[in-house]
Image (cartoon, rainbow, N blue to C red; front, side):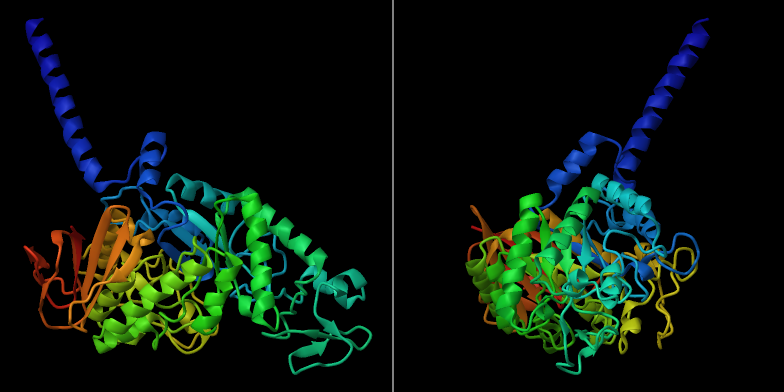
Length: 530
């Protein structure tokens, strides 16, 4: 009997020890239990406040295919959420983004879905409304906000409103910009009573009359429908095309923003206005939370040019002044910056797929104040240029396993090749994907980088992009060495080195000795100042 008791005690002790060891391993390698409300609450507290966050743009049809039909879909996104944010802040297998922007998900005749047939439905190639609701539910567990593309400049010619207009229904004719004559080469025959309709982008996309109170009531209904489904807000397409002049566009954005806030006070709206910086800045008079910052993006934009020329001075001056000016227009303005999106050549091509330059650009823009938007596959080094279809290619999840990889847009002229996919890069600590994970972790560990006030930090070296960011009693210095040469800098008031990044994986990290900072080639340092 005594031997049995001793054996049982021994077994219990072994179970406890093994449980403890398993717990330790689990805490470092597996996601938190997303069913545990306390853990979810902790995760949400770690996220940046308000509408600040890192957003990830998904071109839905190209991202992840869940059923093998060749088209990316909503269930595919749900299945890949652990890659986007697995709930474990220390994980090196998850990007840990804060929000997702979904390109249009509504029924449409085109692959891109910017010609909407029904604003309150899901395109069947993407799944069902139940699939969307499940995606929202799973995102909520991970603290991920979802914003959807809302195309208000035009509808599809197959939308029920336009079909009624073509039948001569006067109510719905007033929904569109219809004239008795062809006012320009962007007007097309309506097919009723010799009238013509405006289609600024394409004859298949008739422009809406956004001055019409009935159209505005329809928009209110659409907004409320998606709020009830759980969306956090909207990305507005083509806002500079709403009306012929920018003042009317700004007034419409003001109306739209006010209405959305009256229904959901924490709504996040970000608008596309592909115009000059001066025009974009004035749109902030509408009190919209964010406008995309096109000055920073594209091959000739300020971020890629700073990296290509190894000159960080101009971009930082512009960034500081821009944030000051938009906050004069709207104290709650949040800059929305990016390197490329679905309408632009992919950013890896700007740098001839040089991983050091790609990482340097990522480090630069992922430490700027505001909300960075990452275009899916950017963190993989995906390429694509020329026609739009080439810029919207399939996400490469693995080069050894095609499961979940979509076909990509029909009509593309680019064959999709990659040396490695997400699965392979996650296993490689020197990869671009792992660098993005580290850069995002750095940002999330220093939330002042999102919302702090930026100021000048002059080092006397133009190859160093540097600035301060202040919030409350805390001031940080952000420094990027854009060059291939080591930099030795004296940083007055330097207190401690809080975070570093190295675009050159094998290089030594930045170091601080008193006020003397050593920045190796293509490295980043975050300092706390006195």
